[in-house]
View 1: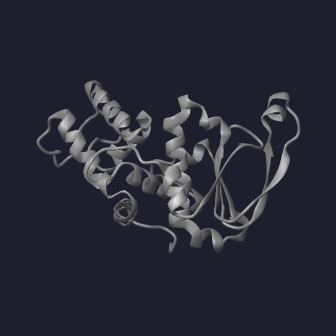
View 2: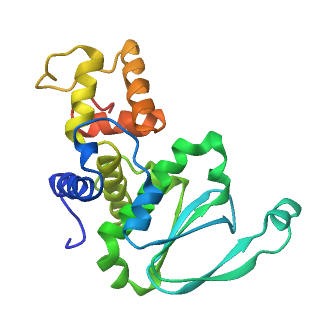
Amino acid sequence: MGYFYSREYLENLADKVNMKYYPSRLNEMSPMDPYDLMEKLGLEIEWKYLYPCDDLLGMIFFADNIWPVWDIETRKTGGKPRVEIFRKGTIVINEILTNKKNAKKERFVCGHEVSHWIKDQRYFNEHPTDLIHACNEEAYKKTYWNNTMSELDIIERQTNYLNAAMLMPRNVIIKEFERISRYKYIPEHPLELKSYMKAYVKNLADGFGLNYNPVLYRLYDLGVLKRPK
């Protein structure tokens, strides 16, 4: 269990990252630029059409290695991919996310891959078969805890938690929810999600530059809203 961390540890780690690089984000709502964070951490960034499918959204290399990628023309025509070499510390984002309409999803995917680098280097270095870590759509949907999760499922869940905590600092999102909803304080017990509250969630999503669901699940995790069973 040495690779698994408490929620409080992840919250504090997220705050340390923001304090070091973007201290103003601990006091006011604003989108994080994950590409800027990658550069500050000394990571290389590549945008590729990733083989074998569009479901593969992001990758991180914990060692020098190879991976098949498509050119845009071979992808369109169903041609064969080519193999490229990627260096340790490279994050590869699927080119399909760079479309403007995917900007909010791209921010979350990028933050997820950065979170792996911040949190999981020891785990992947001690698991040599996993030194290339590829994340598909399912990886970004790990927003719960249960007793049947595999080790990698837990790694992904915690990565999503750290990512959300960096993108939406705890004190800021709670303060903004209180302001938007006109609550003077969040009640001791989580609030039931009412239909009119969806506008609050959307408002927060716009402020953080994210899609609706990551904000909703962040509010669940923080006990602001009651998570459905």
